[in-house]
Structure formats: C-alpha cells, structure tokens
Amino acid sequence: MDPVKAQTLFYIATLTVLGIVLGLILFWSIRTFATISKVENEIEPIPGKIDMIDLLFALTIIFFFYGNTVVLFQNSMNPGDSSPIEKNGMTLSGAILNNIIFLIIGAFVFSFASFIRGRNPNQVFGLNKISFSRILKWGLGAMIPVYIIIGLGNFITQLIIPSKEQVPEMQEIVQTMISSDDVTIRITLLFSAIIVAPMVEEIIFRGYIYPILKRYSHRLFAGFMTSLLFAVVHGHMEGLVPLLFLAIILTLCYEITGSIFVPILIHALFNGINSCFILTLSNG
Image (cartoon, rainbow, N blue to C red; front, side):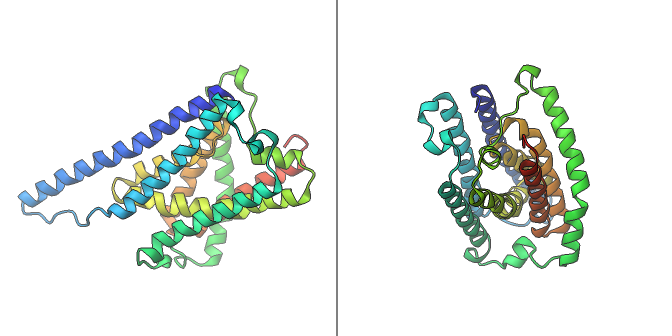
C-alpha cells in the first residue's frame, strides 16, 4: 500500500479507537452523574450495571483490529518486512487458512456472546426474530439504496483524494481474483467473499461490538463508531467512505429488524454482485 494512504488509515484508526474509548468514558460519566442525581431526588435510578467481561472482550476485539492496521502501516513503511504472500499475491493455501482462521474467530465470538455467557443465541442475535421471507425482502430491497449510497461515497472519495492520487489500489483479494487463472483459488475467494466474510464480520461488528457499545453509550455513537471501525479495518483508503456508508446501512437494518440474518444477507449480496463484476470485467 502507498505509505501516505497507509499512514492516513493508521491515523484514522487511532482516532477511531480513541474516540470509542473516550466516548465510553464520557457516556459512563454522564450516566453516573444522572444516576446520582436521580437517587438524590428520589427518582428511580438508571437500571443495569456495567458488564466488564463483555466490555473488555469487545475492546479486545477492537484493539485486535487496530493492531492489524498498525501492522499494515509498518509494512508500508518497511516493504522489506512484508510476508511472501503480501509480496507475491494470495495463494490457495493462504486463502483456505484465512477462511479457517476467520471462521474460528467468528465461531468464538458467537459462542462467547451467547453460550459461554449463558445466553440464548436466538435472543442475542435475533436468529428467529423474523421470517425467512422478510429477511429475503430486506436483503433484496436494500440493494438499491446500498448502491446509491455507495455511489455517493465514491463521489465524496473523489473530492477528498487529490486527482494525482486517484489511481485506486486494489485489495489483495481483488488483485488475486483478477490475476489468477487457478479456478480453485477463485472459488475459495468467492466462498470467502460471499459466505465467510459477511457471516463473520456481521456477527462481530453488528452482532456483538455494536450492541455492547450501544448498551454503554448511545445508538448513534455506537452505530457510527462501529461503522467507522468496520471501514478502517478493511485497509483500503479508496473504499473507506463507501464502506462507512455501507456499514451504516447494515447497522440500521440490524437495528430495525433485530435479526443478524438481514445484514448478513445484504453484505453477502453486495459482495456477490461486486465479485461478479470483478470476474467478468477485464479490469475488475
């Protein structure tokens, strides 16, 4: 990645993490003061205590993603330190390993948020909140507003990034899809883009991080900061604003429906449509 773009992403990621931490502290202070005031005026206090286990685990995930951004920044500053996969492109074994690791992480977050903490996963993630037909309607119906707002995001990106720097850098998975003639690699990457990534990312970001931040702050703050974190950790400067807008839509859909299946389907359709363009167009 271009060092300037990597540095910019690093700064944005740092501000995002600081914003999340400081925001939680601020909201905690406000709520604590409000609770004390209500007690003094004999009004029923704000219910609920801080679940430090959930909060610390969510912050651990956030700092884990931030660490990946730091590594990306360091590699851009010192290209010689990059791994062979980063230099030569993604291999089949590397793609399979990434899928396995990602699935394990997703399964652990899902289990921690539900089974490990003694909760019903249906209630935590809204697995049976709405019918399959409604999930399908939400997923298909969201495609038009998704691409409208993605187009707006691309327009804003063109205004922000100087014209001399508007040659976009493709993500590694996109480069491999375009350049590789190996059908098995393409199938593995498609499986990752359409199945693994939407499922795991939605469980982590919309299903876990967003509700935790919302519980201890405000839904607007939680929705925006989770969406910004989602955009930053993808490590793609040109896609930062469009991904931020996409994540906001995914968060809104999850907030309205209460079912994690809705953002998963929207995310999968979005990645699937984009993958079709990547594979059919000569320049991706």
